Image (tube, rainbow, N blue to C red; front, side, top):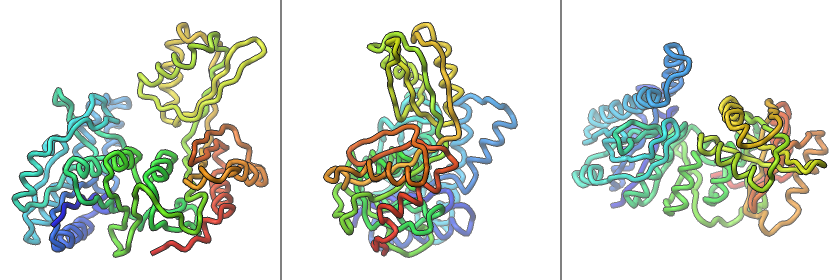
Length: 409
């Protein structure tokens, strides 16, 4: 007998019929002789509906009260799934995040898990119960409800798997696994049988929505066996593990993209020795994530600094920079919206020089202007105009022959 963590996303539990289907999936695992802990998201578009409702009441609601509101979505799902299992003769019990012992930092809207007190969940498992835990939420030391950010139920599931030392964690989604790129945009996208933690972490951070980045980070740090699979189809998924043999000697394993990118440029920084640390420390203290960074010196020995952020962070970024203008010592700030980030990812890049040059050559042939670039050992990211995003993804997917691989189950 083993311990399996199952996570079901919002689409998988979007209706009473689908919740009953999830219950059958849970029973299947139970019938294999395994103990089961289930983590669920809010039903369908519940979270979006709650956000809309809040904005109708108050266009700028406090983050604390938003966490109180949004955490109710998962509570609906856990109770309904427990009822579904009980109706089928399975002993099940539901817990909110805080009832399940999930302790987080005191950050509303995007908290990180600090610790999980597992005693209560372990006791229920030993009693033979299926334990159903609300994803996406936890509680601070002071007792305030927090949420983990959109997609945080993935993080909850993997964190619980790590804390309970589970044998595996299955992430059930509306797709059959991890694809070379988003199949909704590229018809020739192919499902991968396996991918490494590092590659999946890059893809998740770069816009691939199949897994939350923190979930992959937890899985890698605690070596949690992770599988992404379909909640609706009986099909093998994608295994995420430490080392993966390279199918067909793939140098690039995936193309990721996101279209909510803004470039911010700070002109005329007076002190290049301290200005970078001061700016990014200031932004970090306001929980603003900065991505690609470019620094240049002017003829006047001043520094211009460009960096990319998400569109949703622009207002806050400009406000923070303006409030700290005297300390930061710059002349002006410009921003450019309507941008997208397109990235290629693959551990094969480590031993194959020239991949970045190939990428730039492909985009140049399509007359796609590259505005910013960032690289690591296993990825190359470019910021381009949003209108060229899909064309860039399709072209790169073909250029690196990802549509020709035959690794589908």
